[in-house]
Image 1 (cartoon, helix red, strand yellow):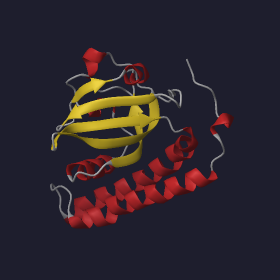
Image 2: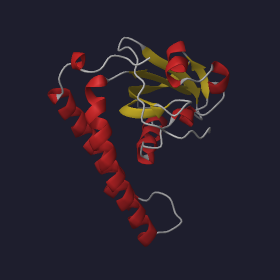
Image 3: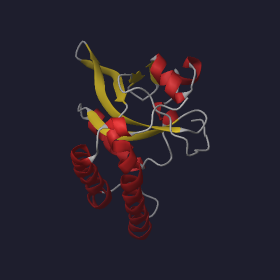
Image 4: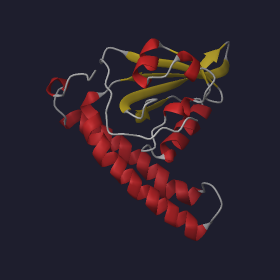
Length: 190
């Protein structure tokens, strides 16, 4: 994965545009549309064959991706807000929908489709990430004290990831009810 220092410039794209990509079963990119390449500022050669995590922003809690992979491996689709990073360190928020790509009854990869979601990104970026950081710190303390050197356990899942998932679901529900229409936000930046 290419390491890029994040900065505070947000990139936006038109709400009618969709970022579309395809991956194999391991998460390696096999297709990226032009919107994906333009918004992420990666060329097709930089993306194809690389892990989709090339655009993972360091602010995103790892537990979100654990839950994402758990859902996909069980054949379910994933919906969620994701903060991604561009090749030059800028960031952009998407509402991601990832579904298994099935051909002739056999799962061959995954099909992420992301849309701009301006209604939620402002409050989500401040509140949800702050709460996840608190849970992440609690998880680190729990793991350090209870079972150092090991991965996830049922206790960790119940205390950290499951509440985070519930928190996100409730948070999204509240945002969609409370936040005003998108027309009050700033236009796209060049």
